[in-house]
Image 1 (cartoon, rainbow, N blue to C red):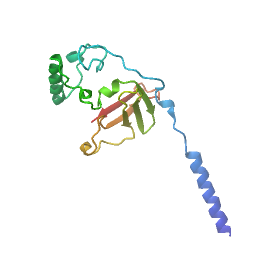
Image 2: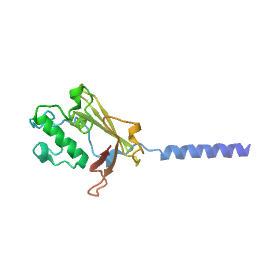
Image 3: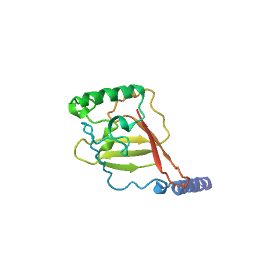
Length: 174
């Protein structure tokens, strides 16, 4: 009988310790992203006019986005076709979702949790969802097994000024 009471006391103590150590998500170290995020349209004269890598630079080649040589060649070919009136580089022309990075130019809703940051469009046209995994995982060995228009994104929060709050989310999308 004494042994049963001791087991019961131990089980109760373990349960209370587990409840005490369980904590809610501490959002005080993450930036406050509440509110509606809207893109700023920057006219370029091309069909993809509102999407720019750096809104402080002129459109087109002057953007100087850090592209791989393969992507730079695709970009140059698309620009040349658009100058001639074509639709190169615009997947929506063929009724396909926009894909990365164009989907990031929509009105957005952002939800930040420690293991994942969720980004969704909040407009009625072309709804999309993007998950940025911030739990320390690496990219899958072969993302071709799981193709997505918005890619597979892994990120990490950075405290740039050492004040204990995250200032930047660094994201790589493949």
